[in-house]
Amino acid sequence: MRQRFVTFLLAALAVIQYSCSPSRPALRSGDRIVFFGDSITQLGVKPGGYVTLIRDTLAHIQPGVEVIGAGISGNKVTDLQARLDRDVLSRTPSVVFIYIGINDVWHWALKNLKGTTPEAYVAGLREIITKIQSAGGRVILCTPTVIGEKHHGENAQDAMLDEYAKLSRTVAEETGAELCDLHAVFLSYLKNHNPEDKDRGILTYDGVHLSDEGNRLVAQTMLSTMQRMEN
Image (cartoon, rainbow, N blue to C red; front, side):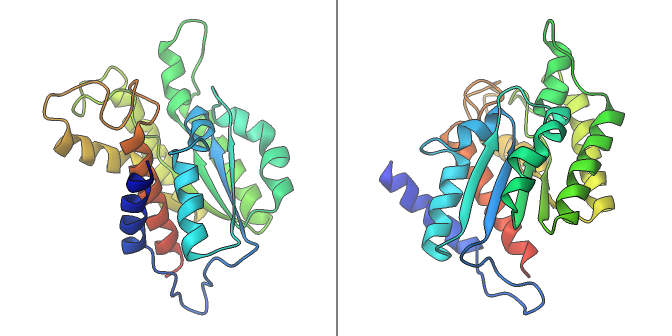
């Protein structure tokens, strides 16, 4: 495990350089980053999880930055709206990652559950982002990753997930939030690293929740996005 972290850290340091312009200051000691999402984020605070990897990396390159995981299993955009004040705004964050959308799509296919309509999804994201920005926080909006790892178009909900990823991109552009396009990153990775066309076991262990490699890829992509924000 330690060797894996060292390898990850070296890769992360290769893409993160906090030498930023005066108009966009780097993260400073005392700043707070909140990761706001569902079970993927809830699991991300465990050893080897993406939140933990980012926390450990920042501890090496910018000590004193507080990293908080605020993920709850089963959450959709509407759930994030309901707990925004309690779990995010009350902590006065400097940066908020919003990593949501899987359950908004996935739940349409699950018995006794209901997903989120495109209209409610967009309205919810806009409200969450606007409130965070109004409170002085900077927002990084992530596109939802995958529901199944087969090559693009072969998983049952690929078309709908693509649609919701596009909605997230549009909301990011319209609100001025930084985009972290995890959906595109995952599809590109799977195209090159899933020659047997498996439905799981590459970046996820069950088609949705992140494997060790998935956590590393998410952490590296998020760190790279933060670096881009600072330049």
